[in-house]
Length: 103
Image (cartoon, rainbow, N blue to C red; front, side, top):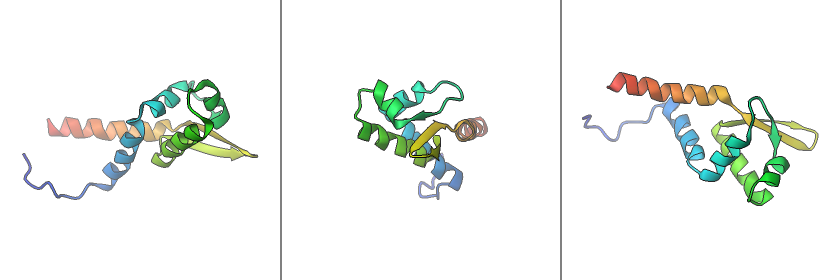
């Protein structure tokens, strides 16, 4: 066991932390499961099939977006979201690399 608990979290892990916090909520997981491959959805479409209020869906989308899990583009008055697969692939790859190195 390493004896330095106070070591600084590496910058790559700081970003990962935000992603895992975002993915730790069941409602946000359900939102991600709504997306078909390559699909873009807006808050209204997600709220329409959700049990959550539109404002709550917006809150969850904001957390997913700020963590990097979702990317977005504003077209006119509407914001379209999609899963940022590159960010998730990199994050999970970093975790797997760490596990491979530490075992």
